[in-house]
Image (cartoon, rainbow, N blue to C red; front, side):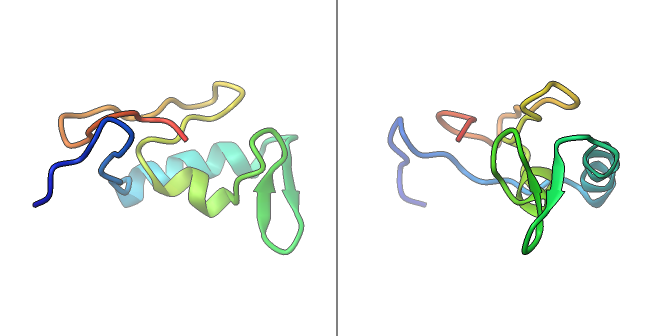
Length: 77
């Protein structure tokens, strides 16, 4: 595996259980807006993206990023 520099990270998907837990917060959130696809109005990310990856944090604090030894480098985007 190639060495990652300080600006790269390994993208780890959440478990299905965690994805559904995050989705439940987003579905009931006042900042969820359905455009072409459900989108967070705070960070402008598609809800499917926000809930799928461990490194994503809810911009209004409903859930935090999961930081594990599997992640390398910066854990935010």
